[in-house]
Length: 409
Image (cartoon, rainbow, N blue to C red):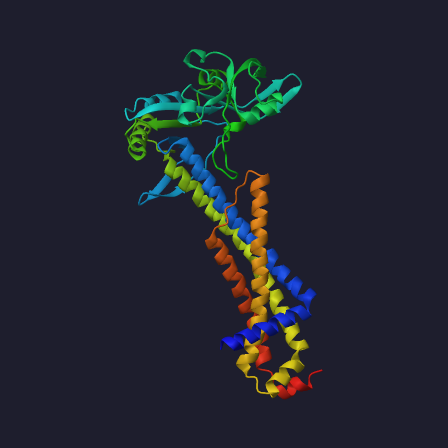
């Protein structure tokens, strides 16, 4: 049996070599199908890991209070109406903030309010900047420090000072450390007090990118916006208190403050991660399904080429059958050729995907991770495509009457 298989593959290799261009373009179809499938799976896995690292860096015990309710099924997040991020319309009030601060199981609470407007510096105008109003506890809550200068303190609540992200500094001032420089916002001049340490924000992340943020005191933000609305509240429990227990206490206090309303979500970091992973998994699955259509098309291409090959080699089939070749042997010959075309194309596609992954990690912020499981899966699928779509041409060759095959011109 092994000698028969080796013989089939030797004939398959000889046939592929005799039609190099045709075989090459057939394998190219498999390559073009395999590369996007593997890269999409790799990007999805890579972004998941980056978001997981981001959550870890923020601290596993931090709580995020956001607008929009979610439901649980056996302690698993099943629905979330507001994905994340911020809008210019706040939903929490100073009364809600006070209610959260009164919870004895938490020791750090800070509001996050977005203030719409336009920033002007000399002849530069920045439309729709990400201006955030918060308190002095903000850096500690997000586990980030001020790399240059200092963060504003409680005594600065009424002052026009700002701490900005690295990308915001470049966009507004055209330099990375514009300490002491001023910008106009809502007709008032703010002085840059500090520059935040750079954040690692994964692509496709559902959280805000504070590299682009301009952070001002919350009291000033309230004054400029004309209301005390808050977009998000960040909370850290007292040391030794679990995030889940603190979340329950905060939920009860905030619900009572809002007259029994539960149109908000108190999310632990584990739940934030679960939301992001679920959405990324869905997106990856949808895009992979679309890319998988290319594999189907490549399979049809293999079938067409094999049908042409069977027709061209009909006389050869007749000779082999005349000297004693069985249907099984003829079937195996053409199945081997089809499987070889798809397998070689798949392996080349896998290699090319790893090369593209390397340069993607080198040149962009995306860090794809192509796992061995995904590699084996794609390799198996490409082999299956060759076998499945090579079956019809192989059966056609195996079932051909030897006399009719010998008469074929």
